[in-house]
Length: 239
Image (cartoon, rainbow, N blue to C red; front, side, top):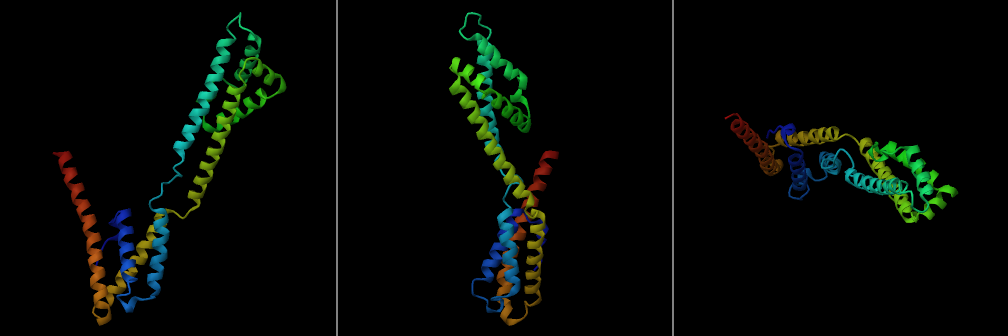
């Protein structure tokens, strides 16, 4: 019973391990019941199963991008309103719009083009200054209290989601690497297969060996078929 475990795909390795463990634990083979190698194989498979299908990062990037886009829109809309309103000489409270726009200029008129961290830092300072008593009054004079509150809320929502992503990514990086977990599973599978191969001529082990060999053959066929498809694909591209 031979198989190159390293040639198995991530999914096929998991499938083979799961089938071998289920077969060994079926109760059909007393010789393997409560064997320590099955316990080791189960433990390594459980750890592998938890991480093999996970992405390298948390997968929260889309949520972060959406939150950033929403705060960019709120920021741009308020900035655009102030920029337009301050240019109308006859508009009531035009000076208030001019003063508020100056606050935007102070912290940068292109915050929506900065990196996440840089924008977050500058937006925090912008909001802090806009919340002073003098500027709050000017915002109210221009009936922009709701618009400002929306921009602040979008910014705070981004900070929450971004922090959540950073925490999730840190947790993933702290996990044992997938390659190390795979090697551990391969090692235990190989030990189990070697054990059955060594004992295959012993009466109590014959059936277990035979059934497990069929599982191994199925796994071997999976990578042989994949290799064949890749060869045919390469040949067609070179034709």
